[in-house]
Image 1 (spheres, rainbow, N blue to C red):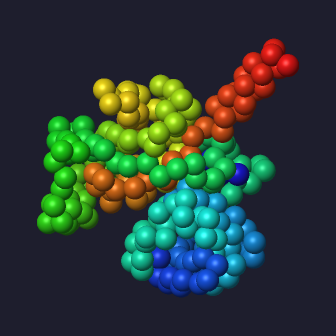
Image 2 (cartoon, one colour; image 1 turned 120 degrees about the horizontal axis):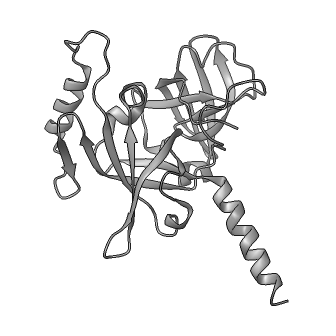
Length: 242
């Protein structure tokens, strides 16, 4: 079990396709230190098992075919960045919410807005490759305000059909392994559910969200408690007609 508090980002430094799935080698510092064989790690929200490792340098995980098909990790290559979190220890602080690392579906980034700059990218205004490069360059530039983080952000995501019922305003949601609070939930005229989350500067800068652009995929895991409630209500309703 995880809490959705990303410890650090790691870089994919190796990728091997096999008949049974995909093996990734991920370079990391803190997360790759003190590992043991069989340990669970959340890789951008996907719970994976450590197969091999070089302490303090890298670790390898294997993705079965089903995992490759249900996530976007199979589309990543060497040099791409992922969010990392080790499983929560029994005596650790519970700073986020219950995150299983079982991706429900892949959502899509539909809008990104910088609160500080008042700038927004709309789905109807897809960024060009040059604009993506420029945005990444600005993010990498040193700031004049010392170590002070930048401003807040609003990210909007379009949910796959059927998942809007598990989301409530001010409730918890996991996106790419990050525990976030739902700021707004709307249903468009054509019936699509869109969720908005507020991103504080620290979360933006210390996770892969700073690299996201409109149209990009993102792993979705809804709050498992909502699934339990739905199941209990279904059972109770069905029993009334037995």
